Length: 257
Image (cartoon, rainbow, N blue to C red):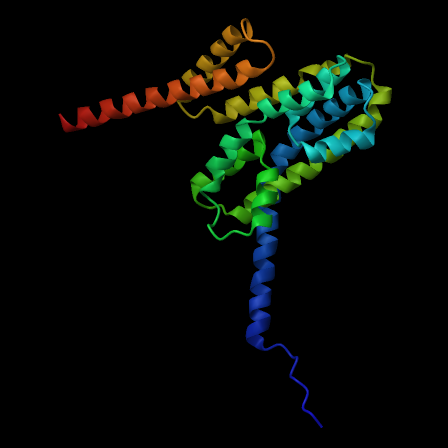
């Protein structure tokens, strides 16, 4: 008889599998732990978006598909507002594309933390899940040196799942909420104010935020649409960088004198 191959796992194989299992569980646990503050913020914002979208005539399944396809709260709020105002599809697509251009910068910033040989599917899933909130959380943790792409991916996708479910729930619950009640239309502004506070780590950041806010108001008076947001952000970030470099050069010259 032909001898059958030995299919029993050795003690070493079992030990490796056990370590891999513990590592996976730790990655999931840490990612969920980091994502839960984002999820707590996404639930009311997602419910608000679902309610507004339902009032604009979008069905709950369509709301869920929009959240899966776009996954960008600000762009979705803008799209819902334009749809409710009777805008055609092309202006909606162009406007949301312009608003989401900031994701190009965020993705580029996080790309340095990915392995050069990372699988294209992993990179695609990682890039798809980047939002303002997950970017802020993952960037802070990468800077601490105790983070990795796997945990960051969990943060992105757990947040994504909560967002999609919240928007769908808001779509179904919108039938029972009067339009304009509970301050729902202020929800997105409140979320971005919280994100701003989270990013203020020094005087330069505060000055940059003030510059961005002032420029946004000025450009909004002369530019149509939402392009003023991108222009103000770029100019404020450039001013903040120039200010930091100036302070850095002064510090060096002071130390060498």
